[in-house]
Length: 202
Image 1 (cartoon, helix red, strand yellow):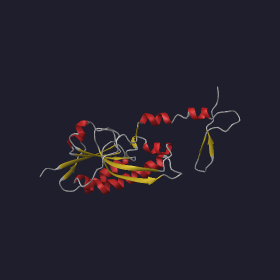
Image 2: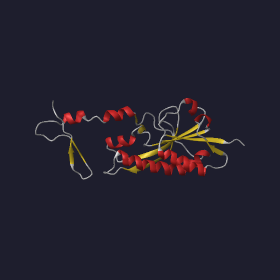
Image 3: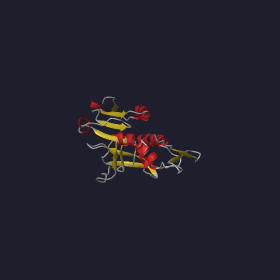
Image 4: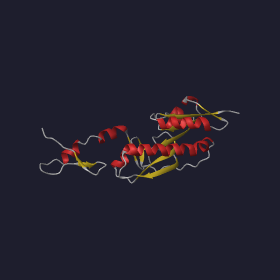
């Protein structure tokens, strides 16, 4: 009987936590490996690298994506849902194909965004959801016990890290709302106090 090799690819602590759980719960007939090239099944958990065709074409590949698909592909999604004024965030389990977060969807789990939430708090909540999803789906994924639904074509947006870096620059907003003796741009802190972005002319 051929042993099926499974690789849990990750770049984050939550992925290592999933690896530790999998070591104790991998059923007979399957074996964990750290080598992507040896794997028959690859599960990505917050993995920062993109799997190349040499893996996608030769292995069954899954991804636990921190974002609701197809609306939020790519990276920094927990920042973008706040920037875009969304009411909910989530995690998607999907098959990996040749595109970036475009594979068929197996499950999406959503959670509401609270007024006090930050990108960091959403990220931590997302990690908790990913861990629960991983434990719920791990054995079923190994045994091909799932249904996957194609994503809507040309739906959503693909967010890159460089987009988030650009969004950090608030110079335009500070300048746009600068006018002597007028209220400048601001944000609210946790105490609901206004914190102003003070722009100074040369």
